[in-house]
Length: 360
Image (tube, rainbow, N blue to C red; front, side):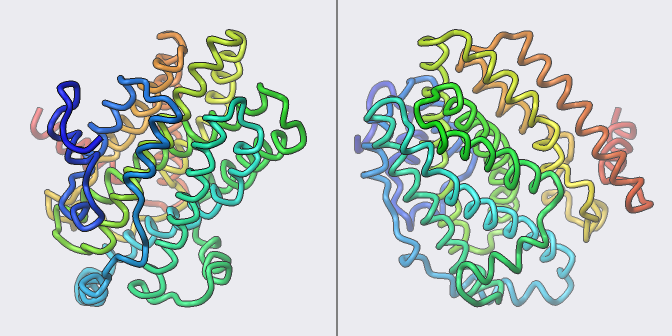
């Protein structure tokens, strides 16, 4: 696996073989090129397992000393920006623990041994991600305490759509698998929520924009290296989910309807997690340097394209993917309008609307 094969572009090979210290210099967009290459290559569960062995990393090898200094320096003149970063860190930390707590039924009920073997590595990955965030919050953000204690304090700061998907939809789906481990359809629904929605849409979107900002600013090297390693782990997870659902559709074509129904059922909550209308922005786009502004339309488009790209490989029709995009646009628009109603101020998208008008 080391080095480049004729089928593997240079950029993919660099991500594939990067050590944890080298992750400090990897662009998140290159991780996504690597993820797309895996998607096209249709990596098997054992291919992904072999990558897990080669790409293993330790949270204890990360050095957060520069991060501490830079985080404290943001108190002077960058407090609003720091608030936004901490909100993102919190959602990922709580989310990582939620998926760690709910994955085991999918491992136990996996339809074949290679899938069970790979999912066992994913369970280890999710636990490692939780420990990574626990270290970061204790040493950098300044919220110490045991894992359970810190998570209990942070859960009050998640957005509404988060509770719907993580506390209801994911828990109900994985609990159904636990009760009936031989129900293949229930397992398919669990994988759809876990691997396509939570990881293939929500996590990939958050990682892209959070890591992009940190890279542009040249700050938080310890977090950047660790979180980029997390993103590479997610590359394996998402590609496993796509392959598992694709094979489910081949074995039992009717199961593709269950994938479609599940996606459409949870899509609005997923969009509201990204849009977060119940959370007032601590800093507006006009207060942020141009290279650090995050365009809500770009975030919306990336999240929906990230999802539909994988739905096509799974085997869902173009009509279904078009419907996901159509509904997604409507859900985002509604969430942005709700933001304005809740907070009595314009949503940041209005700023980008004016920019488009001025340059159009």
